[in-house]
Each structure stands twice: as structure tokens, then as C-alpha cells.
Length: 226
Image 1 (cartoon, rainbow, N blue to C red):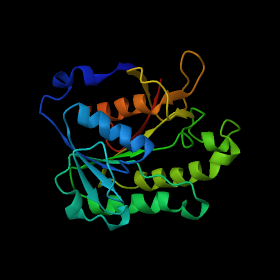
Image 2: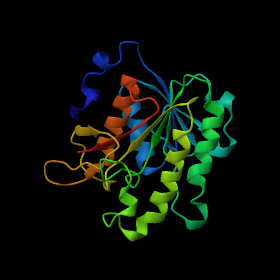
Image 3: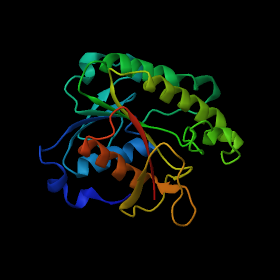
Image 4: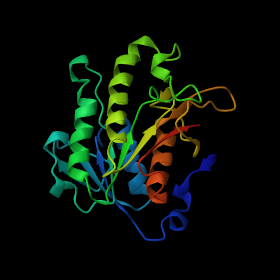
């Protein structure tokens, strides 16, 4: 399904008005663009960051993700999780921080929207083989992809959390062009008409905020590409 940027017509997409959105990791590469996209559409954005630094959001909550409490996140319509680490010793944190977020959001209406990985996408219709287990995934990225897949597996067990896991493509371009369009796909690894699995961070931010506004795909994993 090809989508175009909803930022141009926010009134049509948001009949109930601005949403209150928290962005964990809003000073990172993907988190900052997600926070900026949400703020540009008129949403009430809070940057949830470990250090008090300049953020693209209107306000900041300085808190380590593991120190967040249910009270900290109360009242948010959605919390975007853009947590990321690639240090070998920290890879288990990908699962552990999602367990923590799920525990403090359990039983609430707050959506947990996770910036995921392409590695857990399936390459077969039976959903038995993932990208991270195939030659398509470069060896150096497999440990991070595997750790992030463990986080997704954890979320799949939570029927008490309104989570959505959003996988980017394999070629995820931090400084890529903002085209304003993207393809919304599902659990299976998808290529565009040029045979590519690619997307800019900026277009990913558009798709992720569109998903929050639409309120769909709760307790599902979806994927985006351009």
C-alpha cells in the first residue's frame, strides 16, 4: 500500500485534535526525526531522554528508560520507543527495556510504538525463517537484529499492552531524502518496485506518525519501506 505524507493535511487525519506523544530516545537519529515530525503536525510532544540536551520536542522528561514509572507515562496517547544500542555488552537491554515498558503500560490505553528491526521479518510465507537467519542480513548486524527480535518476541506475549512494532527496511538511510511517500507492509520481508528494501529515516518517521494517528495495528508488527 503506497502512502503519502499526512503532514500536509493534518486536519483530515486528526479529527480528535492533537495527541500527546512521548518519544524515548528523542535525541537520537531516528527519535529526533520522529519527534520533529510529530511536532510539525501539531501534536503535544515530550522528549524522554537520559540527558538534558536540546531536543526537537516542546518539552523534555529527563529519565533513563529503566527509571520510568507508570506515573511518568500516564496520560500519553502514545509512547514511541526509539531506544537503541549496539554495544555487545548492552544487547540484552533491547529485550529488558521492553519488558519494563510493558510492565508500566500494562492495562492502560497508551500505545507503545516501537522502532524495530528488519531482521525479524519473515522471508517465507510459513513464517519460519527470518531475515536475520538468511544471507541477506550482513553478519555484523546479526547480533543487534537478534537482540531486537527477542524484544519483539517478548511483546507478542503481552495481551495487556497496546503495542505496535514497526520494522524498517534493511537499507535504513539516516540521511536519506524525505520523499513524503512510503509502502506499508506486514510481517514479511518486502521489496519495492526496484527490488530494494530501502527507506530514509525521514520517510519512516512519516509512516510511524501516520500509524499513531490512524490508531490501527494494535498488538501487531508492521513494516515500512519506500
